[in-house]
Amino acid sequence: MITLQETPADQHLVEMHLNKEAWDRKPLLKAVYGHLYLLIGQQLSRVDGSTVELGSGIGAIKNYIPWCVTTDIFPNPWIDRRENAYALDFRDGTVSNLILFDVFHHLKYPGTALKEFKRVLAPGGRVLLMEPGMGLLGRVIYTLFHHEPLGLSRPISWLAPRGFDPERAGYYAAQGNASRVFVKREFSGELAAWRLIRVHAFADFAYVASGGFSKPQLYPSAFLPVIRRVENLFLRWPSLAATRLLVVLEKPLNEGKDGN
Image 1: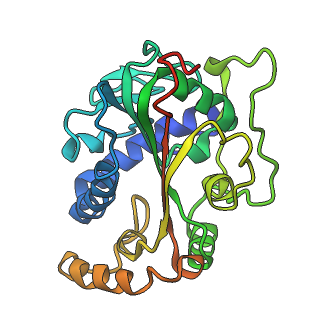
Image 2: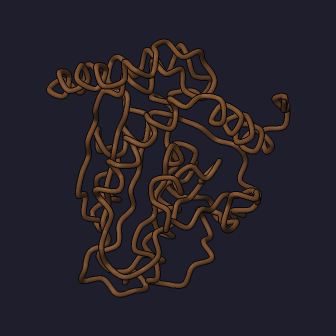
């Protein structure tokens, strides 16, 4: 068992190994994550290029999108290659999809990262984000049961300062950032160069009640279909019930492979 470290730079690696332990002992996690990856898979671009996940953690996406290239800032046996979201080692215009599952809210400078994403994407390529949803229920749950801050009133630094070194970026988390950027549209001008294909806030009671990676499971796996039916009843009220957010951004077809 790995214990939590005091050094912020180590926290991501520590959490990754703790999550791997939970994944191996909780079969329900595979089912609830399978549903979320299915939603992502339905939105993938079909243009030529690689499908890449940034911040793959334990590499679970391979169970659902097996051709996906897994990456993380730390090397591990289940990761295909080491990558940093601010300085990707992919050639211009060679990626069809960039998937970030619970990663966007760890990007302290989202505008700088999105600029890099656009560079590597082919025209028509997509960025697909799965993030915490900030409905009333989501805000309550993530405040009470998750250690990362929501950051709903904290200023967002869109661009990195001059001289920023991606390899020295420290640990950062603000779970509400995706909702602020894509639902509240706090940076609508900065996103004008993207096509916003989908912003879908929805209830994911199945994941919440599963206990996730760190909390006890609150229902038997056999109840999962029932919980899914209950979730569907709340689709009309995302501001109340949303605990998850799916965002799909697309690089316009009329942009060159270098993003210009």
